[in-house]
Length: 288
Image (cartoon, rainbow, N blue to C red):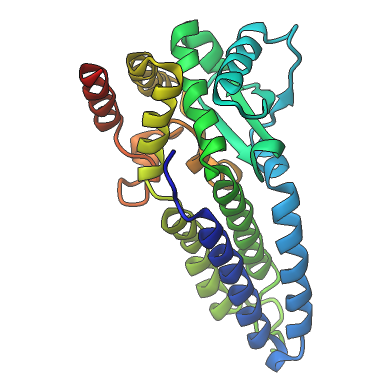
């Protein structure tokens, strides 16, 4: 399995949110309220760590499923987790026709794998096995802690930015309380892209290549994942997700970019191109 220094990345993410919150606190009221932002930093750190999986699942409105409700999904995940000698994650389904899947959670013992209704309808069982192998390797490579924390912290940053926007933000002592504070507007303009940049900087695209490779070794069928990725690209083109802030903050966790190409630039994309991933999988199959 590949190593991604996820402990260090998570620590850097926590440091980033602390620096941001304390920086905002130092600008409001001459720094008199910085202690409030320090408390927010402590609270969000613990909340993000313990609830990162819930935040991602809630963003996709996912619900837990039993073996009776999703027998194929349960059978595949049980077989693969047993083959890997690892705990079986909780299974969820998101009620959307956009075909996708993702894994989330703190560690392999507290992990969840989610498929959308769209992907379960689109893929055959062999292809679904390839996708679930990919997601399980995100769990076992411990990618999901960094991914989940990144999603939670990006959401917090965006919420702080929106709060600053709607409350008039900084300075607050003006007699013209109804006039928007230009500095707050500027802060909002920079914080929203910062949330996306935070995700881009902390989640390397190589993570997807490695999960493709490791997942294919687990299933023993790289061409199944290649076939699934080709179907997913076409499926997303037909039924893309709307790039709402909640979905954008968890989009990097999904196996395929869930948005239309015009909704996200290549520079800010956290996913490598599907064609490149398929070519690598085909080469892996040729090598045997």
